[in-house]
Amino acid sequence: MSKEIPYKIYLEESEMPKAWYNLRADMAEKPAPLLDPKTHAPATLDMLSQVFCRELAEQELNETDAYIEIPQEIRDFYKMFRPSPLVRAYCLEKKLGTPAKIYYKFEGNNTSGSHKLNSAIAQAYYAKKQGLKGVTTETGAGQWGTALSMACSYFDLDCKVFMVKVSYEQKPFRREVMRTYGASVTPSPSETTAIGRKILAEHPGTGGSLGCAVSEAVETAVSSEGYRYVLGSVLNQVLLHQTVIGLETQTALRKYDIKPDVIIGCAGGGSNLGGLIAPFVGEQLRGEANYRFIAVEPASCPSLTRGRYAYDYADTGMICPLAKMYTLGADYIPAPNHAGGLRYHGMNTMLSALRAQGILEAVSYKQTEVFEAAEQFARIEGILPAPESSHAIRAAIDEALRCKETGEEKTIVFGLTGTGYFDLAGYAKYNDGALENYVPTDAELEASFSKLPQV
Image (cartoon, rainbow, N blue to C red; front, side, top):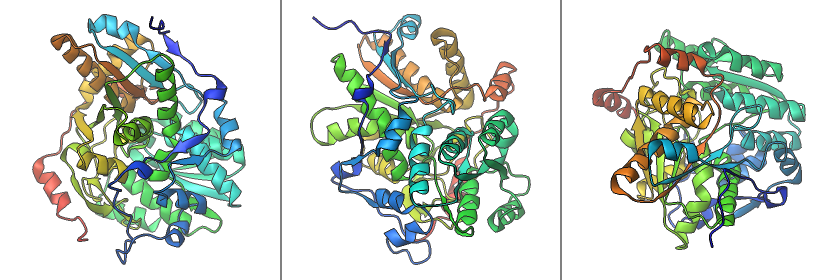
């Protein structure tokens, strides 16, 4: 007899992961290496350690160890908000009239309101362990900046945040949470860095992008003694820390003998998507199971669906290492949509490799389609989702409706990365019918692709 599945599946503290899972160890075809932006030689540990904490740089380059132990101090911090629940969306299933079973891993049960705290506390820990004064970073919607400011406060580290200007203006309350936790917050691009001034000169009046903010944060870190740069997505070290999401999901499903058919996550730089799917991709690569993996991105910033798989700069200022990834070009500045955390021109190298190998599917949606799904989910399931998370909700609903048409009883799992209570300006525009759907033309993308570095 099968077990009755509760509305929320909770794990015990003893069932929390004790090690992060490094998917690259199980990939026969590894992601292409990062390259020095000047020489185009593979990035070395010493080179990366000038920008990142040394232990994090080691994690970035590690392709051999399948599991990397989570230090006890980080595990103790995780206990404040983990394990997070895996929720059966019974109400949504009923409303849709679908035979599909829908589950979501909810990462919004912490003050930062998102999954970002999983990596923020790890990166702050390694910065403190190295004896640094502080760290610099970028943030889009503000979830990463909020999480990092909390983590730095916990470890008594200074935190300098460059927030994408359009989000800085759209989400003032998220900015104030960061300041409450002690961070300084600068709208990017700004006049405080040479790169910021250059971008403003070339793009007057721009609302900025994550690529711009990354450049400013890196410049500030390398020019400030006792500081290093930390990143909330894109890097393999970040996806590594986020595998607590997928590992917990895997354990919760196994407790009730549930096998997912489709696993869905929103995709900007790749942190939550990679963290959710990595343990399941590992199973598939080892021949133990078979799944569909779907990345969901905004139509205004379609790196996986319309980008080029090529080496490109990770930042608009072109000072960070080159990464082989699906990219729209480092010079591409997305439209100011309300999913600020998904406004990045590229994608994590590991996820890009999975996409190129045909393991990862990708779809994109316009923001009105996404907010429609967010509203529907809020009314049915009782959680106001972040616009980023709502991309995954949109895709999950569409998959469930296809099951309704075909009669297939698929099991769908998606990542609900955070709450949308600081995103009410976007909801207001949606409710007023004022949201605009910007989709770049092929000509615009070709102009950006023409500037890709020749490697």
